[in-house]
Image (tube, rainbow, N blue to C red; front, side, top):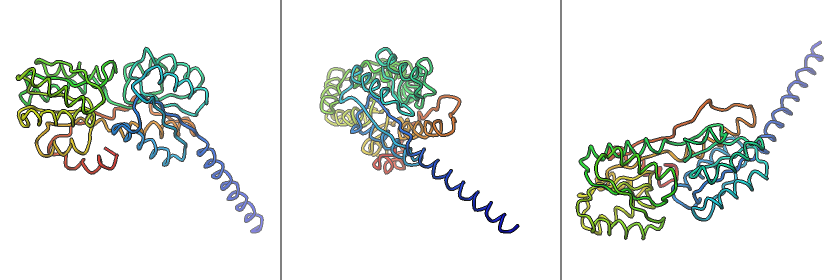
Length: 315
């Protein structure tokens, strides 16, 4: 009898081991593709990519990050179409322009590929068939920033937009303008920090009443805006705030040379969709709605705590 029970237990243990091995193998076979409008060498998107890599490691799945070389919606839609043809187990996309990218995203959904959107497109994600969106509401974040800068005494502002036409960034400026409730003008610039610095300096020279600058990216626009203010000899006289984080901008906040930075926790925008899609592929589990990753205002009292994590590519 003891021998019989021992054989049964050994058989159960062996079957369990086979099941675990099979589960591990199937997990490693899960392939997820991410297509965003942000290049992985961009300081902001490098953090997103770091989050995706961490999510893939923790979930034991494969992640492939892709993006056009510049902000190019035609190229991005082609990357999505190519991803669909590979039939991945999940697709992660940003949606800066739903008109240009919508048809490609809908093709993915029609092909039975689970889609999660990140960063931009919270307003259209569901209508395009995505399971959910991970990010922040850009208009609300901009409005909160405008209200805070108005509270700090701002009256005349410029909103430095490095990607005019990117719906998410346009919404940031619109929300900022509504929340600021003063004079607010959009300053179109490129992604070149030198161009941003020159154009912000020119805007300050053209209108001495400008006392507030709202930048839409810490490294691309926030840091050059701070440099332009310094060039104009107006450090401390012009309040500068930015969306997103960089170690140098946070140091300026900690020193009192910048007002605040808006943290949308882009590491989570990369990490969570990978984990969600991995669990969806394995178990059919998915959160029941969108996941807000921000906004969080990083002011002087918090900035020093975040600098190190920003330098590590996490914040």
